[in-house]
Length: 460
Ligand SMILES: Nc1ncnc2c1ncn2[C@@H]1O[C@H](COP(=O)(O)OP(=O)(O)OP(=O)(O)O)[C@@H](O)[C@H]1O
Image (cartoon, rainbow, N blue to C red; front, side, top):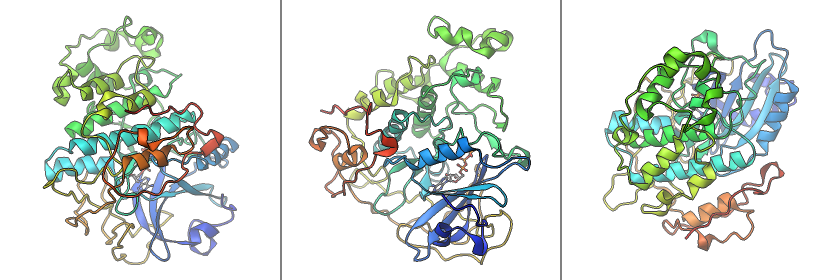
């Protein structure tokens, strides 16, 4: 954690920040801005998330600091690493530095839908999903519920040793987001509710890790169809979780939930109070399989429907999902989700993140003129103007370049992800891809929970 005396920019930066050159802004979320910085030798990159404080806020609460310190202990190959933390006491802003990832599912899906007009290949879909579940299983095993899983915070590493590896971002931040951190409501930030579980939409207060599994189901469907599954009208950020339009979209696809199938439904506040809209309407059920165009008997459809189970108690868990038949049949998931698997298959060059090089930590001042594109593992930065979500961004300098990623073995991947497990035997793991040697690292010792409760992978 920084000493708290440094400013956000200039000479008063904390020591760790001085190791980096700020390149510019790469994103803006509900609670703050995300910046790209790179080490002075330009080899490594980090993403720095700056959270705003409300004017009336009296600083970052001890609870938030405790939460953040816990997040620093989280170490897993499929979870983005929090590498540093700094609180600037001058303006009570909070800086969190994470490993940088070049891609995210939002952009990957959008690239397929808008640029390629081509479905994501089944190997990539399966590998992305498996890794997402693997990271989520680790978080859930450590009692961390994400609560805001969506394609933009499921990151995928760009070229380099970790090419094509999924990293879950924004985990554990939900609790830090409470006052005094300031949501950017006034700035008109729009929040997506498309991945929000029905129990939350109906006002449930005691949510569980099942809310994340609902979001994974929505994301799985979107990876297949390239379209958000339940596209309710997005709302201006509001603390009220009840969104009728979103429920309406869900009921239209999955049919009306019933208290027979979901007994605790009757206890949910909005089920009780909004009888006219929520209980009263009749919904025809067009069937999920018609929307996602999957055979109802296929393992993929079976897994998807178990993720989109209305009753959170019956919804499949991440640990169970990892054991699902879908992951045991060809194509088997792999460590590099973006690698080509079939001879003759086209290598897809996903666009790199655009960087607004005119924005510094304060969000307004001008930085140095545009940066030259970097190479290797770093992001390609060509001084492009930032694009907003939903607005197609320009194809970047690296578009068209072939991707050559390590063709690492899945066994090594599993071992790396699950090192620390008793009786680990990569030979028992089913997913073998390629021949590349992967350095095994002890990855998930975080929070002193050395895989207690972490399921053993009983693989063929
Ligand atoms: N570690 C990272 N490396 C690279 N890009 C990142 C990283 N973390 C976040 N981003 C990107 O920064 C952008 C903003 O992220 P942020 O998490 O602030 O907002 P969001 O997820 O889009 O929305 P919200 O804050 O409402 O959840 C997104 O495009 C996200 O993919």
